[in-house]
Length: 303
Image (cartoon, rainbow, N blue to C red):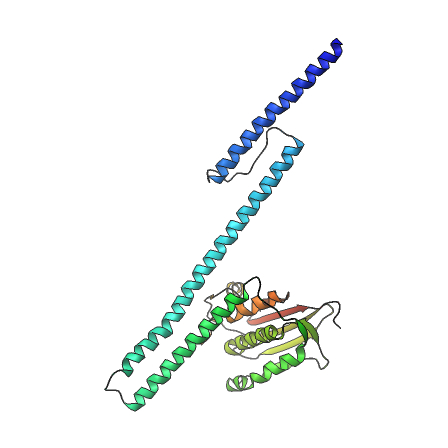
């Protein structure tokens, strides 16, 4: 009887001791969370009293802290990108708007000749077209980046679609004295994707190559075992590795990506569309040659 009493007392002491230290550890963890939430510290929860279940709880709390920090960092990046995009867009809108308003004032003068009026009207028209393209690209990109952006998946013979797009650029290649090397297999190459999205991607990449090439343009379409790859390459001038690492950023101001009448949104639009199609678009600089590579992953039910 005496032995049983001693065992019972010992068990109770053990239980109360564990409860005491566990409660103390809960208070300590609560204090650590309070300091973390008040930005007094960035330290995660650590334990002095080890209990299996409490360790699991502390681990999950620390995982949540890591996720929250990651989300905050991503939010800051997104906010900075948005601020930068708005700043660049405001600048790009302001330029043609200033031109348009300035030449409208000239047109209001009674002293200008009919030839001058014709010239000023053409300048205003060009400024308005520039503004239209800019706003359309900005709107298109904002729509594409929505989570529920619709994709109409169909069977596409991409070699036929690529040729169709390139025919549309014949005059532009010709006007710039560019004779592209085009390597497209004769046999049909099938992918499952959105035809309008694929066409838009190809158009944007060809426009980028035509506008910024300082020499030859090469277009290669290749059917691989598990994917279809389109590589458009051209020599470039004054383009650095740093420029290439940001080439798909909204409004990145690299000379080669924002020259002439481009809005700086063509490549970001192409990148986002490829991601929506579960494909990829990458850029590499080898010496002075820029390589744009699109990859569409083939499904099991494709040939």
